[in-house]
Length: 344
Ligand code: ACO
Image (tube, rainbow, N blue to C red; front, top):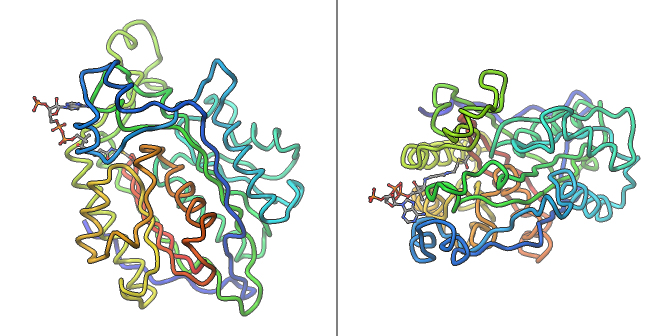
């Protein structure tokens, strides 16, 4: 299924454009290597690395005081400092996560309180691994409309709390992290801007990656725990195929709607679910891996945090420079998928 062709977005009514002013990220201290995992389930460093490209991941120490909102706070503080903004300069918080501190209240409200803010809108977005790009798209619309000047977009996860540590097919894949971006107004005539966002979903594929219990349909009781229905389940091979197809389609859609060719792209930041998926997508797009930014080897799949943490690292180490053309390309449970093309 190819996403419907969509034109690049029009200018905002006031001629405003939005850009990413600054990024930030945060990770738990605790590392879990493939060798550590081999002591928990029947697996090996060779198998995991060969099939996924992952060597290690970070794991939150919840009893030691770590939390999803705590990582988001640390990442947000870094981004605020880089943007030379006080928390009071924020107008809105969009918080993408599938592993919030609690189901009620929204973790965006918990972060708002931790930042010492009141009254500004704060909302959680449940779009799994596509959540950060969904947030970026919404922030872009609010800034271009003139309604908000500075929107904090968060992708933060403690997925290791939803992992079945007895299922070697899934527990090897995931890690914890937070990445954020502050979206604000581009100066008139400035090249840096969000050029386009394209969002899609296909709910008919909802059972490729899901958690049966924990929502209103199935309460967590003893039977649920016995059947291990309160953990993430996935159909790995089917997701793999859908991931490659949707990532390729979304990349082509973003480039075509902006009248660009793949050779004009400076950097490609795909969702980091599996290095083999990323390599297959790059090959189909005829894009050399030197222009693909990855962090999966060190951090595994951190869902909504993969793209903002990879972006943050590449900006901070100087790979991404102002003026570079950067394509973020995502897919996630739902399925959800989409892209954001930016001139950094
Ligand atoms: N260690 C050793 N052996 C394993 C492990 C493990 N950790 N996991 C599975 N195996 C075994 C299986 O039992 C099976 O053995 P069998 O042949 O004796 O039955 C064999 O390895 C092959 O298993 P498959 O599941 O067919 O392995 P596959 O090659 O498909 O790789 C993987 C599995 C890496 C999970 C792959 O399917 C994948 O990456 N899929 C995409 C998953 C993904 O993107 N998830 C992201 C979640 S969604 C999101 O991010 C939004």
